[in-house]
Amino acid sequence: MKNFINLKDIPAGDLRKILSDAKKRKSKRNNLNTLEVDNDKPLKGKLLVQMYEKQSSRTRLSFYIAIKQLGADSITVKANELHLGRGGESLADTAKILSSYGDGFLLRTDSDEKIENFSKNLTIPIINLLSPSSHPCQVLSDVFTVEEIMRKPISKLNICWIGDCNNVLNSLIAASVKFKFNLNIGCPKNYNPPKFILDWVKKSKRKINIFNNARNAALNAHVVFSDKVVSLNDKGNKYKKIRDFKKFKVTSSLMKVTKPRSIFLHCLPRGDEVSEDVFLGKHSRVWQQALNRVHVQKSILLYSFGRLR
Picture 1 (cartoon, rainbow, N blue to C red):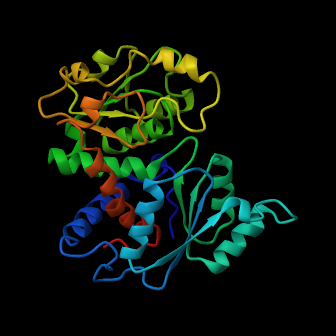
Picture 2: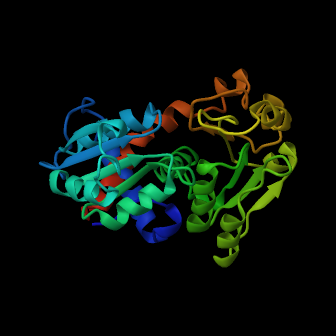
């Protein structure tokens, strides 16, 4: 049993095994319908419990499909339908109940502390579907998509992020350390990644490049990532944030300074951080990116159950 919470805590070799398994499994799905089970049925009889404390479209749907294709079943519970520390039941007690009924727990939450507490009290694997500081499933799938499209290891590519320093970027930074790729970050002043992330990068003897100019960050990039500047649960002055990021929009003009045949990726939902012509244009691979979530998440599940081939 292995948890999948933060990329920085997972050995690089294990992450590479997940990607290799996902590539093999995707290649064998060509003639199968969406809910047809993989021939080996590796998780037959397993029950995965999913809980979403935050809105979700792609993560919820892709994990449902991933679980079904592996031969397992899932149940989705709402946080407000469980005790979760209320009514005299501690979170530790809830974890014991989940461990008794289910074989794995998948959590999308607005609390890093909650994931940490669950991980200490569960006797089944926990997978982080998104937390305030991390979005590991999204980013590992993105690495898969980059290598699939570019047909070379991500370590040989220049990766660029334009936008806010959020949980997705935190996981992308962790991936840059694990997979040893060059990462340029374009963001306004006072929006740099948190110090604990930068300290971890330095401790890992790696380096990321931070630019307060979008064009300089995107120069010669093979891949440009972006994300919604104002998320659904953003706190603070949203209008000020929108103003601060006005010059950090991914446009066709910005893409002209990137490498020939560069690609644009976005984890969705989108906002004003990318122009319509880029999002729907020749650089964009966002739909392929979204679909690949299914394939990589299947291998993440197998990793957590010790079933990687």
